[in-house]
Length: 298
Image: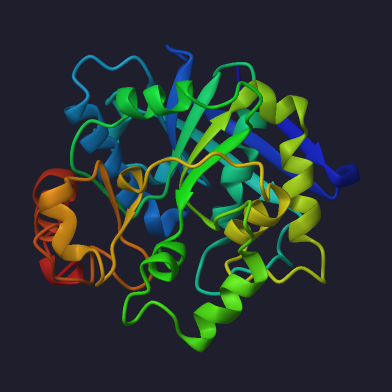
């Protein structure tokens, strides 16, 4: 059963569940958190997950601000929609992102009565092959006490490989802020939450305490808050579960066959022209929305 009202930091921040569909069927879930602008991409990725996991034993959920915005076609699919409103975070940094990015931090609390494990995914991903069972095998190797796990950020990989374009003054400052011997900076586009441990260790309060700290250098907003709050305490999931698309790794995709491609930065599938983005756009137009004015998405 979903919790309907969550308050943290003495009531300063609240998460309210206005409505939701269905109850949980399994003890694990893949969950997206989006605003209206990214809803279409979450729907596309959710359908990919469902089609590629034929005998899945996990729920697929989308948390969003308004269920009424979901096209009727998707309401009848095997997707759990949760209408969520968060208040008290308007002052937090977002830059080009949406405040919906902070919603992922609430997931263990929202679903504390439903799931033992939550795999959070950003909406700007492409699912190349079934990933869930293999990812859970990775998780089985972690210490039982872990709260949250994530893949290294592409910046860390560029630093280690010393690629030609890997280290710039901006990246150097970025790494000086977050990199330590005991902690590789993680990308929050794919996260694995151990829900009971997140509740036990009060993960949400720790992350939002950092987020509201005016002295914290949140260069990547909620992602940086997660890294700072959990520095040295986050197991690493392999990069192929969060393959952040970059000029340094694009040509390795066919060779290494990652599970999930993540279109970071400006490499968005709706504005970029890669072999991996073309089917994304075609599928979305033809099968999801049947939009008449195709130039809106091309």
